[in-house]
Length: 112
Image (cartoon, rainbow, N blue to C red):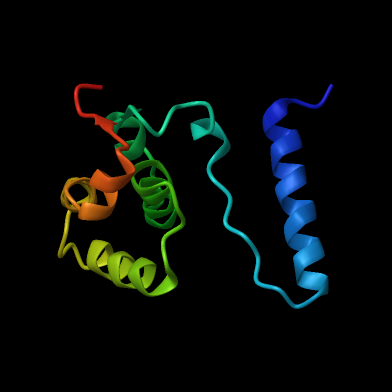
C-alpha cells in the first residue's frame, strides 16, 4: 500500500512534469512532514531541524509568511547562510518581526 508521503511526492512530481512539458517553471511544494502543522502556531524547533538550507528557507516562508520565497531573496539568504554571515534564528526573527507577518497574523511557537 502506498503511504501518504509517497502519494504526495508522486503528485508533486506529476504536476512538475506536466508543467515542464509546457516549458513552465516547476512549483516548489511544501515539505510533506510539515503539511499538518498549522501556520498559525508553528513550532520553531521544526524549522530549525530542517537540515538543508534551501528547504529551510522555503519552509520558513511557507510557515511564517504563508507564501513562497522569491528567487532573489532565496539566493541572497542561501549565500549568507553558506558564508555564515547570518544564523537561521536571525532569519526567522527578521521574518517574524516583519510587517507582512504581522498583517497575516501567523505565529511561531518559540517554546517548542
